[in-house]
Image 1 (cartoon, helix red, strand yellow):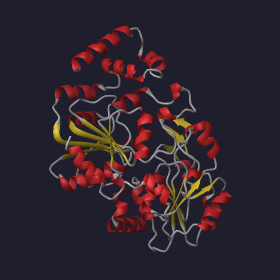
Image 2 (cartoon, one colour; image 1 turned 180 degrees about the horizontal axis):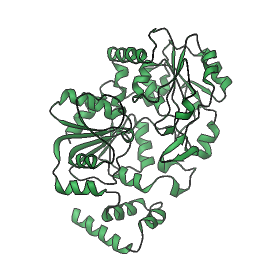
Image 3 (cartoon, helix red, strand yellow; image 1 turned 60 degrees about the vertical axis):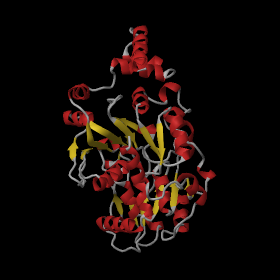
Image 4 (cartoon, helix red, strand yellow; image 1 turned 90 degrees about the vertical axis):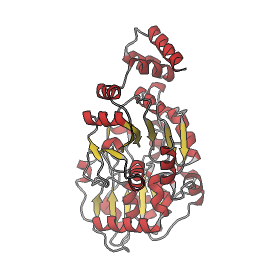
Length: 417
């Protein structure tokens, strides 16, 4: 079968031998992505020479696992929580982290810089590679198992589902090639499974397990320990002081290059605190794809920039109310059953011509939906930071699979492959 496939690839390549890579991307990929993929794999597109050299020169270490999160910028997400459980259960394995931040990673793993020669060497030698975004490889060696954990449940439309865009601008050749080679993809609920299949045109294996990162919300002792630790770090030692977390997503319409987007607070934080309960603290966390340093340098007092904190889950534990827009963080937040406020002043534009959404927020009893600062201030008055919420319909659809055991379920699955 493999020989026949290679022969087919060769025939395809011969037929399109006069096409450049750019022509294939512009003309073939939008309408025939699988055909493009076959040609790209045969021609070796997207396989860095360091990785190819190491794959040819070295064997795979069955006890080596390579982790990366958010392009190597952060120690966070599902990869982090899988790793921390794995070093408990399997201390004899060799662990590698692609990471360039300041967090102290437990377990003494090998730490590499993304794109370095050592990065590709260890990536090629690892039996398992785990990411929540993508590696800079279109294809990986057959002996390696690639677990894509992803991040969040989709509200905003993704890739091929973005019908507001022309066909050739919905996805990219490199992402399609990468996603088609995932060996397994995590999904937190049946809804996400359906959207992932459609948005990524993904035909591979999907593990519906809930997300490992959210297990903490089902372990009260662990949750309270992290909550106390993070609140102490940000200077909130009194448990009665309400903490609001503002965590918006990035916006496609303000691209400034190098996969980064302009950040805008969209409301006056000082006025926000004037309307919030006494002594309240506002944490502001920009997306890792947002350029926010200039905007957030203006913050002071009880408004704290926490964009430098790698792990959003820890910040969610420390906070009492989430304020967000179209970010998938909200679906993880609902596992905590704490209140949420949506602040979406650009809602019609965002879910219309800019990006599109899978459903209207008003379809679910999911929290206050505010389109102006005045509505946001009113929602603050009506939202009790110390009171849990049910949002039963929303929870049952998006969070019901979570039971606090996702991490072990995923590890057991992974090591059985």
